[in-house]
Image (cartoon, rainbow, N blue to C red):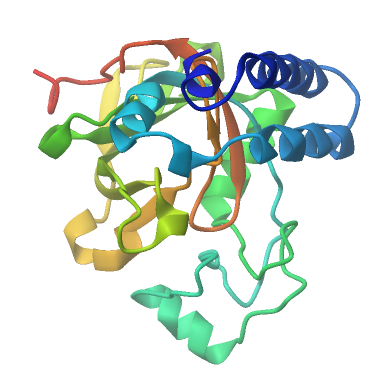
Length: 254
């Protein structure tokens, strides 16, 4: 596992691998979210992004990842579009933020962050086994991209949400080191059943401005497991499916 061997001793490397195995076993088992979160906290506490070169973090973050687990966020009626963890509220989000101040009790994280309705729907269905979520990451300079693909069950197709992306070097904010900053610029539903059709996202992302931007922190990354937290407070656990970022279309990859 390259992440720990680059920054820690052999014993830490073995410990991290053991924690990875325990975490995935608990996610797949019936230990409950409490045990999963306990192991997740243990695993992320062993990782220090400042001890790795940005190029190394980018290299390990690249590839195609399958979402295995996510934390839950309660619905916040005062922020129907979701509330960002950093307190910012661009565009339409600012209207709701002005009408309703953040509550300390919102969401599982207890910091006022809450996910969007679409994200909650997808993650709830993921837990029920209805959807599969894959994330393809390519961070090669100006062509860096993050592709999210929500794959529908029964080979009915997928919803693709694609963004330009870059790795934050942490110079402006050390706590952001290794974070993937992104801005959505393409989305569509690709249906395969009962007929084939591509349905574009109805709103041009350029009209959304800052609302189309977000980030994924680097809480932990190895050759096999990646843990990150989004700008609306949800923490995700990904398992690497392939070392290449498999393209869902050729608009950007050629």
